[in-house]
Image (cartoon, rainbow, N blue to C red; front, top):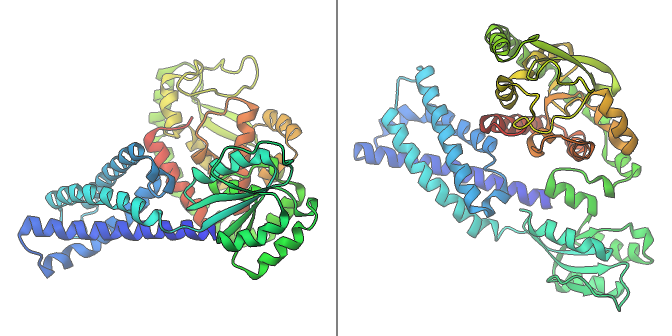
Length: 461
């Protein structure tokens, strides 16, 4: 229900953007030519339809379909302006590098850009104040320990789910203890839950405890089967709002229930074919540009152009990757260590910083994609020296090796903090497990688009 509501909102936002693009184009014709001729529309329909679809993809890459962005007016304005500017450059390249449509609409394109920039921003503000606030999945009841109330409350409040935590049944709070000072109604008796559900029109119940631990709770929850109330466990609500799986709240039973590797066979086959088809042209381009990259590395610092590392791949198999060297040759004279930050790490060379930000140093790994060691999308492969201590601290760490590792992944587009410690890796593991659970061709496409946006903004390590 909650995911459906989010998807409906994003769909409306996309349709609204396409309408804004179309209206802006018609206004461009009216302003430029004084009237809208059918001949002009026919001449511009197909090329601009392609442009509009590319612009939607560009908006996604820029993060403009992240519903929580709408609530930050400063970030929204900056991100929208950056996204539209990038879209304008793409459109100019499209018309002048692919001159198959018989038009080179420089003036029309600039005018259309200005109108779209204004109308599109107004549309997003209208969406926030009219649609986003009215399409809601309703009120939520939380059942669980008192200590969980603040985190669940603020998690829901800060999300774009369109739901509100209104009521809580505390499973571990004696009557004399003070409850958290939040805008909530607290229930003391289990028998009051059915009445609260009906009176407050509760649409979802978040379970912060196992029903078996509370006498008669299963019987109360059983009654909700005959209603439209949705039951969500504590881990799932965090998974939905953050895009990661919180390891604190999951068990081996949870993984057995949610990981269905037998259902991924078709997806893995299609993905492998896609990887090969993409790797061939990118590999040829890399070979053509390699002399330039090699010269820049040699000028930047003495030493070899390439360096290799052993990584842990699918099912724990070890393989070797090659990268363009971005550090000094003595970077690991004291042994393997994390890169705290590309911008501040003294071991990274000047050209190495640029290569890392643009992900140029990863290009030799296209050979690993061809071999099948890597995919374009998947959890980034770690070094064995780091995997062993991580696996000791977190028994579920080996689950990230269920999928073929990738050049970029869900953790790389959502967790942009440099991996400077084992704790950072454990945080990334939560995103990796989310990807393992939900991986699909659509999620891979989303990661690819987000990666493009990150590279253009030169974010991450």
